[in-house]
Structures are given as C-alpha cells and as structure tokens.
Length: 222
Image 1 (cartoon, rainbow, N blue to C red):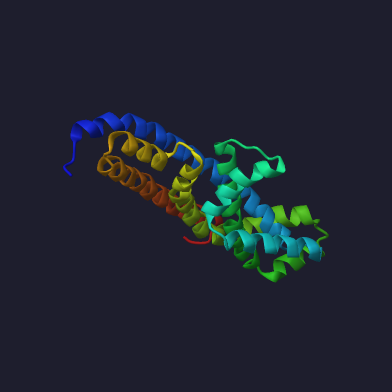
Image 2: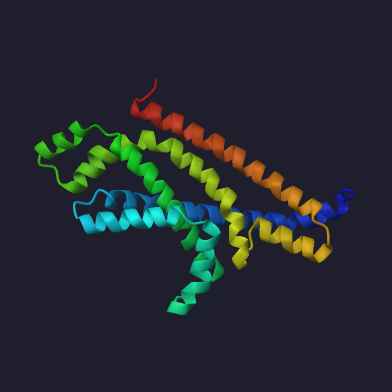
C-alpha cells in the first residue's frame, strides 16, 4: 500500500482536533491521579487500621486489574447501580483512579524516605498532623517522588487510547474512524504514532527539567 500525501493532508485537521482531546484527557486524568493519589498515600498511614486496610486493598485491587476492564466497568456496569456517566466522565474517573493507585505508591515511597527523626522532631514541637504533613513531611518527599511522577505523566498519555473503547474521541478513536470510512489505515495509524512520539518526548524532557529545577531549589543537588 503506497503512502497517499493528499489523503494525509486531508485527515490532518481531524487528527489535530483529536490530539487536543487526547491532551485534555491526559491532563484531567493526571490531575485527578495527582490529588487522589496523595489522599490514598496519606490514608495508608492512618492510625485507624480499618481505613488503612481498606485503602491498601483498594490500591492493590486497582493495580492488579487492567485499565481497559476498569473503563468498561465504570461506563457499562455503573448504570446497573444508577450511575450513568458520559464517556468522558467515565473515562476520567477510570483513568484517574487507576493512576492514582500507582501514584499513591510513588508518594508512599517518597514519604517513607523522610527520616523518622523528622516526624519525632515535629511531635516534640507539638505540631499538629496538618502542620507536620504540610511543613515537614511533604516538602521533603517532593524530590524523591518526582521521577515516578514524571514517568506516570508519560504513561497516562500513552494509555489514553484505551478510552476509545467507550467512544471518547481521542487520537486512536479518530484514526480508527478514518480507517473505517476510507479503508486506509496506514496513514492515520502512522500519523497517530508520530503524534504520540512528538508529544511524549517533550513531556519526558520537561519532566526531567522540572525534576532538576526542583532539586536545585531544594538544595538536593548543586
């Protein structure tokens, strides 16, 4: 099958729109994962054992099942319990929760890297839990957490095509639709691969740059 340049130029606008949808899905999903992941990580250190155990089991259950299954479950099984969501909302919930469980482990490892003496010093100064977390623990956990957070930023972008199974109009969904309409898959799928590469590489470079800047600012490296 020969490459058709006229066809390539014709489908570029549709893929450009789909690229915007992909970036939006990745951005929203990552924002949910960042916030929820921190909540799950802190909850795993709860002094109440039932809370601790429930959160740990939730994290392990989500990490042990495929994202595509979770997307299907939220979108198709949710209505059986009265939870009717649009494809976008269901996709954001599924991908946000999935990566929140992974990021919670990144946060947990970073939090546990904070020396025990820091916790004891905060306690000796009569600092409450909120001040201990915000002033002592989390600032020191930022640096060791950055590499993992950056890796999952690229990972969540590459997993957005899974949302096409419930009709979210991201890149793979657009490429499949173009192929079904024209019976040509070479150009759209090749362009999708190139677009993901063009987005992922700068994202990875940006994540490394932010990591270096934050570490210099914190005095971790010179």
